[in-house]
Length: 211
Image (cartoon, rainbow, N blue to C red):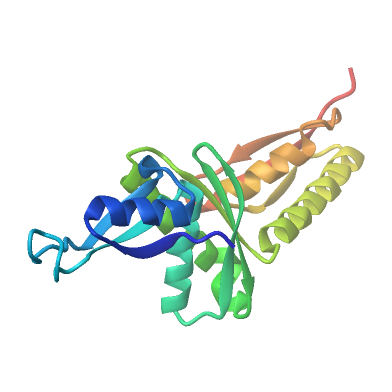
């Protein structure tokens, strides 16, 4: 595994940094440098003096930073879990949590997972000065949930087609409603609309009349 941080000593700071860059196999612009000790103090700056010491770390991308922040939060909360970076594309990051305590991490109807997603996204957005979109999952919870919503949507569409009447689904979050709309967008026999306010907003599946 490639090292991400190293401490190195040298006759001076420049030499210590140069040695650290060799170990990390990195360029100066790709690292962060922390001077532990400037060195010096010997005769003519050479004999008997203290060596300079630096700590050099590879700069993390947005995805790696998101992973690091989430792992630290989970560790402090006492969860036995590991965070994996599963996707990174410009301002969109996807993380997956694996391990134990999944029920507690996910929370009731995914509430804890959503809260973690919101907190980390906000922190990253503030740090980078732009909107960072974070998709956070825990051992496939969101995927299984999406598949369940898709099944419900397709069954409701069949009911609407056979009965010739609108079918109203239970209240859903904006993300869950989007799954319903996407699942039925290619169904030429029905259309979908959203009705209601705030927590009562839901998807209505409308059968199309035969022309």
